Picture 1 (cartoon, rainbow over the protein chains, first blue to last red):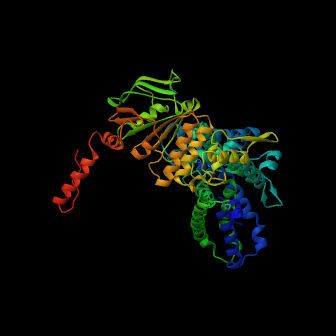
Picture 2: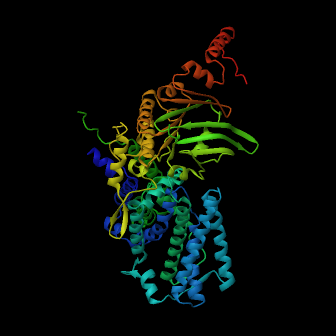
Picture 3: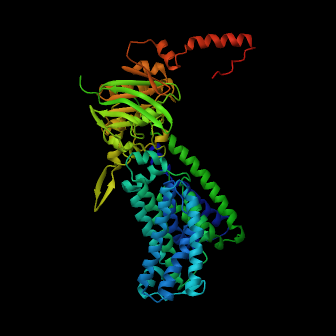
Length: 333
Length: 272
């Protein structure tokens, strides 16, 4: 039993799973929601998928001891790029998709290189690139198209892959989210690269002395988060056949809340992909599931705040327990 | 006698106009413990950093096996067998024993087209390595480093260095933050490393610990090697006095007591 607790219960994701169960129980028992309706609702699943794709790389950056808030500008940047290139200029959709993802690579490289070359905290660096990219997106789209919104007629294959609604309400991006979660899980928890990320977040100098290419890894993670953000924006533009320069800012805090609820330590070195996954679901259920209850939706932020605090406190005590956990000593002979 | 594994010859180190180390010469052979003693600010840290590749000497040479070498960075020094273990073990508190033991050189096994981290092997080797140093309390490689005692962390870090082929072990105040019992664990590991033929450079300001394991002693005062002698050549009192910069600590005690008697039990103000 003791071994069971140590191996399966004291893990980074346990806090988020407990919070998720608690939130669902609260909505069903106090809010009078129907459990089957709540769990099968497209609204929170779509919300979780869009948020989850951004939360995964942001969470990994946090595990590595860095932070990226420029995602808030990269989401509209991704959707505007694909809409301007393929909608306004009428280029093939593939070119638009590559341009959107390429922009992500570019901004990610810029963030990453600045983060490793200067000693400025990455929060400040990406705050700068967040604001700068907002300017680029708004200024660029007004300069090119004369407006702040562009329509897009994606080719059927692109619509099928990135923008279709399955069963009339489930966005296909859900499958991208699940697949990306599996890929991230594999690389983080089953390959040496994951170990390097944890080591970097634990102690960057020791990690570098141990021969880990910390600079390259940091830059890669920044590229990953910018590309994932512009991927989400691109999918939204293809799904809704249009793109706006605004929107995306709410993703910054939402992603951070999801990641922290998911058990990632803000100062780095601890966390898990499953935790980020369940943290995202918890956040999505709290913010969208309230519509299925009798609770006035104006209270939803209060619940989000309470869940965040509870989850963080829980994560703290679970982490302490994990630290002091030792398997039962075998009787000395 | 064979050439010393690591040797410093007339090494100076200055940062701009500030001289930190003057004309340091020392050598350490395999199977020998060199204790470096010195008060805070005597230049111990700078000397360690020069030995392990963080700093390059301003003048003078570092030799390994009698041949001059230049370490560009700590990684290069480690690759050549000079391993440094810092006061708190330099490890990652929230990682498991197996994972942190193999950080940067993770064992992998084939999984289809992928190479995946081999947790079972990593845990087994890490636990075996540290147990071979007599720390049998560590028996589960999945435990987190942060759950180990300070002495266990030090032991793990030393076992790790030895496992990865260290020939020179630089221990930076390994016993400073430890209790008596844990310090004795670490000292035992120092002796075990010596027995395995490693050259150990043991930095401390605890004379008792130095006397317990040292074969050879160097005392640093204001960046210069003030004394260099072998085991048994000086008594503990002499050693303590040397470290305090030549002032006899016994006299200091008497002086303080005298002051307190005449000043309502107040301790004397510090003198500079």
